[in-house]
Amino acid sequence: MKRSIILLALVLLISCSGNKSKNISNNSEKKVEKIKKIKKIKKEVKMSDFYKYKAKDIYGKDISMEVYKGKVVIIVNVASKCGFTPQYEGLEKLYQKYKDKGLIILGFPSNQFAHQEPGTNEEIVSFCKLNYGVTFPLFSKIEVNGKNTHPIYKYLKNEKKGLLGASIKWNFTKFLINSNGEVIKRYAPNFKPKNIENDIKKLLK
Image (cartoon, rainbow, N blue to C red; front, top):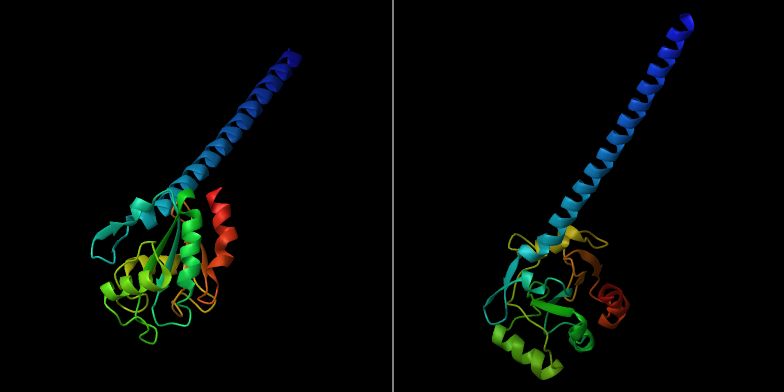
């Protein structure tokens, strides 16, 4: 009788242990799934952030960044009378080489640095086309620092800070955005466009 009771107790103990292990395993799986869902939601939110913004193009038309979904994007604050203005040439070369593979370059004129972009939007377009044959999209003049910072630049600076903080230090600061709308890199004004090429190719694969 005692032996039967002991055997029954052992069976119950093993059964409980099995159920306990199963419950622990199930709980672990549920936690993993929950973490995956949270990461997925965060990723989806981040992916969509860039695309919710709009800006006026150089002709005054509202353009949603959503039209660039699926493309690799370079955003650069430009100026016509800057020592880095010749970078227009390098940017245009990149655009011509990779535009059919999914690259878009967006130029945002700004007059905030030593008043090196004093012209009207019409004058800016004319200057860029005549001197550098620019064909990539240009936008209306904006502010990239201060209380009137354009929302797109608030977003970019928040996503990728420079060596000395978030603020834009000079003309031709460049941001590289992948095809999911994530800001991947920020390049200093003196960083030449041709040196971005390898990073572009990696994102276009």
